[in-house]
Image (cartoon, rainbow, N blue to C red; front, side):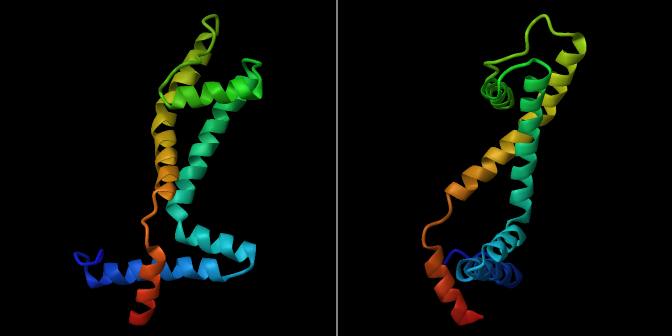
Length: 140
């Protein structure tokens, strides 16, 4: 039993979360499913949205200030925030541009890492969640 070490309050919270997931699957309206999903995953969705927003700031900088294409701007933003650093700004850039990109990277690396971690968390969901859902309905 995966809830063996949890207290009663934690077990109830976990079962409520599982029941919310079942409501999302049973509800046929797409908007209602989306709203329920956001309620269930509020923190994760916020972290992912912030990560996408911060990435888009780098893409906009690259497209507007450096006059790069969308693909090259996206390559710059992802490689900078993933700390690979494969695409940098040109050496003849102004001093404020180096400072701005440095601050953007300094703040953006942990934001981007959190967003990637949240995305990986959705890919690695535990197997057998439906079985837990079926057994939890008997106890509530």
